Length: 441
Image 1 (cartoon, helix red, strand yellow):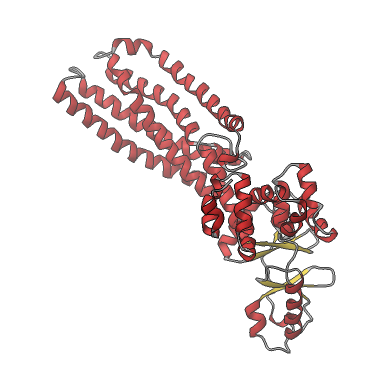
Image 2: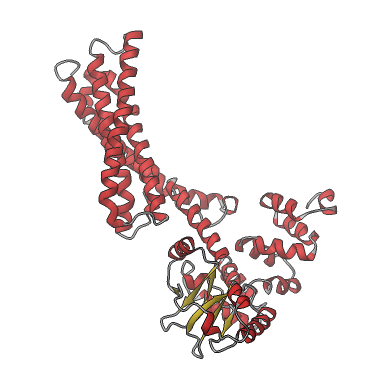
């Protein structure tokens, strides 16, 4: 349990800072020390998984208060974060109407607009006067609507006719009709729109909310900007983990069990390890050259790391550009030309530095023998080729994966580096065989 000084005085900021390292019993005790108004804000700021953990450790008599504090979309997230039997215990705390709303949301895919939306939104009729609409919105806000960014004008069949902001409502003449003031061209999303597409629309237009429609143009709910902030964070976290060469985690780091973490990491490590075996196979093909000129082996790490690093850079840039919608698949030729040119310039600079280092070290120590300059040229040309190939491979692989319906983030930096390692060995020893034939070889 927590120490008595903490129990005597605890602020929301202090509890939030200590939260990640506290046990569930300590979290529960700290949460109960918060004043009611502060506790509400603190609870709403927690992730769905943390909210569920807290609720399930509360006495049954206290659960209903906190479950009913959440809007339907957040409740759906909370239910999805727990086991089925625990979900039933949470749903049992809801009234029939709220339970139906949550069950409707649970029928959608978690990463679709329908799974993100809040079915409670401010609605008016197009034939209302402005004064009638304002009075009706006040009534809705008191009863169930918690988020009022815009008022949506619906007909008798709940089809969306237009939208107007609160500013438009209060600035309009009281005797005007809603239909006279509202915007008729409304940007909407369908129930099945992927959350990444929804986030791009928010970024493009700067809206606070977007209406969600079904196939009959009936309005089902709204996706709000705070929901999308969470989505963007989750997507970025998932992509970063994949780019690091592992499966994405489904929970915070400390909440993933030891063996669960191993399972997430071992798959890609095995693939990468098997890929690196191809590097050893490639080197064995040039075993004779290595025996005749052992000095060649000194530069293998330099060559393959240059290609791997350049490929990792390129793949990271393209993965992020795809995620932000900065490029499309049809831009592949522009990307290829740009990255080949970049690879040539970068490879030339790195190769020149490598050549200079070999020549300089030869002057200082004589470590590379009488054909040091030719050796340096072989290294420089190899770096040029490997870096160019690495940037091209690293930039094209995410696009190829997207083309075939896979997540571009799977083109992780370690995966690209492993791919380029094999080609780097082949390029290096091929160039060395051509340049050094009759001298070192």
